[in-house]
Image (cartoon, rainbow, N blue to C red):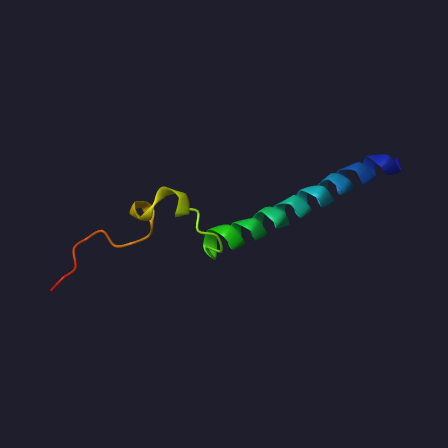
Length: 55
């Protein structure tokens, strides 16, 4: 009977650990822009304004 209780708790524990890792990586690489993933494509894909400057 204990294995029927322990198995879902163990799987929930592993799922929460994977969720925390995924959220952490999303924050580090997505929101904080720690690594610039546009370096291989040249300056045309960088986050730069494309409209002409106003005078």
